[in-house]
Image (cartoon, rainbow, N blue to C red; front, side, top):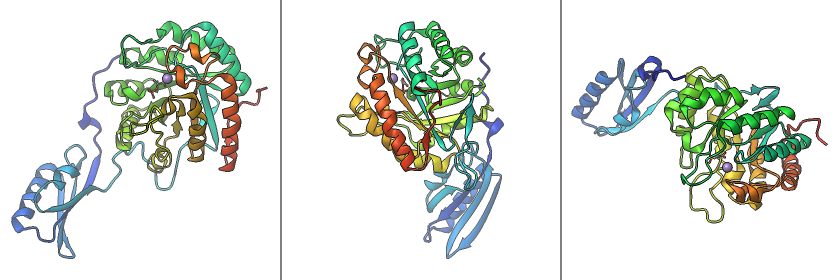
Length: 360
Ligand code: PEP
Ligand code: MN
């Protein structure tokens, strides 16, 4: 159900900003910056440290913008003193706060595995995948029923009917479901079927959609846009958290750089960097970064070594029949080999893969 946008002023926190003037700034420069500060901030204090005037501003985050002050004449630097994303940020030294999805824990000691086709095609495909994932001990099945495709002529997904098929196959094998939503109007229906709602890389900037999934009551996985900064990704998470949904996970899936050969560049540093800034579990999808089957396993190993809380792998019985992302989709034997290898990497870094005990 649609609700009108929440206005920013409703939930804008207070922010403190420090503005450091150049040593050689004139009296006129200082007076001009002070007068701007008084227009924008609730409280302004000027002090002098080692011959530099320093202004401390307090006010609403939406009006006290460090960038505005940094570009004024006579200003050497201006920066915010508090967290820009208070809900996503880690408390002092607290690190990742684990969250529960069904009986699974993301962000704890164990590394979770999510796997399945890129897109829902038909029941046979889903049944084969669910059965095999369960036998390998994988406990979350992914598959998109709504596909964000570059070309409108490419396969767009099986829609709600496909999503329901996914749910019933997953239930038969006691698997949880991860699936993407693109349309704010469909959030409640996707959330009714999925255990984790995915926001794809292309949707990370869709603010009405972020707010809507923030109200859906299900855990949300936000994939990093292909040219998104960490601040932009954390801002997306903050939108969801602000609506009261506390179960948000981030996913690095490769960004655009100069790499030739891979579809994208897996930003391995994103894992420790995001974890140092946010309390949210950080997942890695090596499949979309790789773009080709042979690169998925080495990238998955790198992700686990870097501290990823879960990996997301595209797999199905006959990858060559996949209607999207066939080139990066593994078959089951390749998934099995990948799991064996990443399990060794996990144990080398003091963790273990969270595979179900019922595998065999
Ligand atoms: C997907 O997970 O199938 C997908 C479309 O991923 P991304 O949004 O990262 O491209
Ligand atoms: Mn895909």
